Image 1 (cartoon, rainbow, N blue to C red):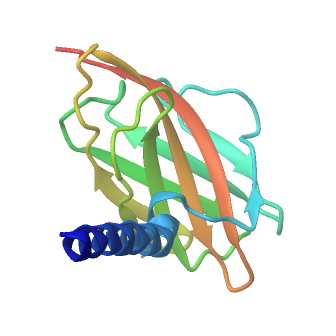
Image 2: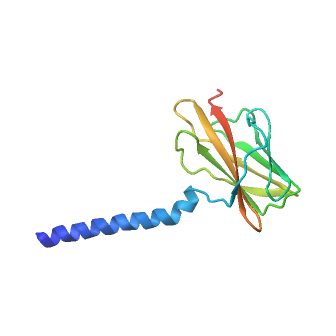
Image 3: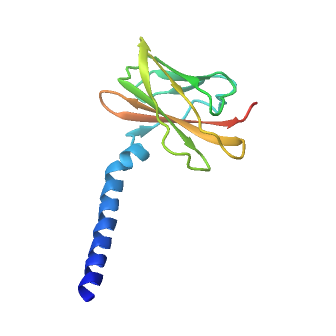
Length: 157
């Protein structure tokens, strides 16, 4: 009887250790790491117009989402344009500001000189309105740069 209890305790501790190791290994996927975080040039609303940010290595980027306003549960286009800057890869991480909405990080494809584009879909929010942060994750030969932009979505039906 005592051996069974000890065995169950050991299995429980090993299970907790396994969950901790898996969580540690997967954390870069859930919490993106960046060498530099850059703020947008000025407060902007992606529901009304594209937003820009100056980059630390020189140059600037412009992020546009369309259609506007950004819909929930319907695909929309994500377009990033770089001027005077060489990006190797770009992802956009959509996260709920006040509520965890799961991992939503599409990779954008290079579509031209300094242009990356893709498609994303925001999950539905039970309140009908949601504050989001769209963080561009930009890979260069030297570093990883994060640029966060905030916007609201709502059910526009």
